[in-house]
Length: 107
Image 1: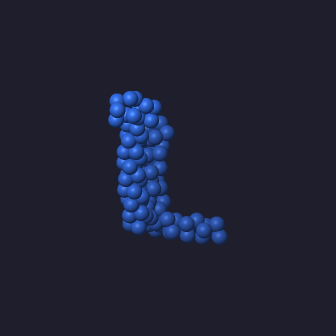
Image 2 (image 1 turned 180 degrees about the horizontal axis):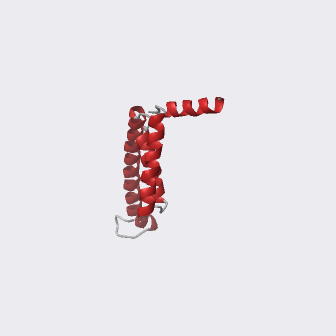
Image 3 (image 1 turned 90 degrees about the vertical axis):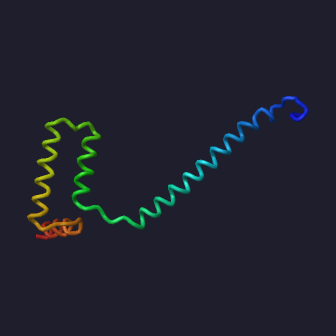
């Protein structure tokens, strides 16, 4: 009927279906790329080092709204104290820190 120039309900929704299908194809392609990227990242990741962990802590605090100048200075001092503690006890990774605390609890 559409070919004869008569509008139909189905003919009215077909263009929207085509748009929806195109969007679905684009989303599926993005999901495939994202899944591929995640798989690659999981294969290539190494555990974070202490500098990365400290940075993540400070970034979380900043995101929580604790980013005033005094808080930033406090964070830097706190980070320095953590760093000195780790170096004093020769902890360079998470396994060393866990072992240190396990030894402390065992004493």
